[in-house]
Length: 347
Image (cartoon, rainbow, N blue to C red; front, top):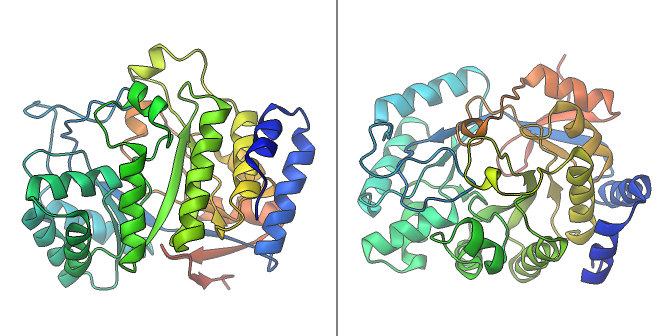
């Protein structure tokens, strides 16, 4: 059992930065004694930027009818997957805005087409808000929607749309998006139907430490009940070009990121994998995160549009991820979306 709620709050307020990192590193060593740190080659494909939710932290979405909006056709998506496979990719993360006209038949056709053409590619698809939107527009139950998407080719579900799983925060930053309880129900239902999912947290959006701990407690409880999360992925809000970025007092720092990463490792010791992000904190902070409890550095992200729209310009490649892992004293290992390891070393 991980640390208590009160202990987590005390650690957020503590100045013992090094001690916190050491404690989280001990948990990582217990869960991953083989001294391996993993990474993935995949691509985020944002099939549409049309969205009806208007979240204040998002610079990517466009309202329905906007001349800047798009819906990718199949040939364009095929081209992106071909490029991913040429770089050694094993999966794609398929997400988009909440489109008010796309029902279950659109998504079934999309998934069937991708699986038929690329049976070897893992399809990690559709955040909880997207799944809920598909169910509502199609007049289906949540379970029936997830079952049909899975049968059409969806292999797992990403943790997007979680932000902070506390409705006080959600009403302020994403009042039209699903509630915390609805996000939870999507993931519980997916786990019950045999699908694995990830859990995420976007922090630094004006929430309190209590809100972050509420989020961690919610994720821990789901994992206790279902065991369906493969990984937890905390990341920092990117404020540029967003409505929320103009009103929050100050963006999160690297120290805040590393503390939150370490506390996540201590609190969520029932989730096997913890990802250290390079996209918003940068590659050096990502590397330090490997000594603050993380055992994974995520993907090379051949393509990423949502955070990039908010001003994030960080980029990396496989060679750089392998280097920072090795320089931190670990063995780099390529993995797939479900954290199955492929190659420990290259000749």
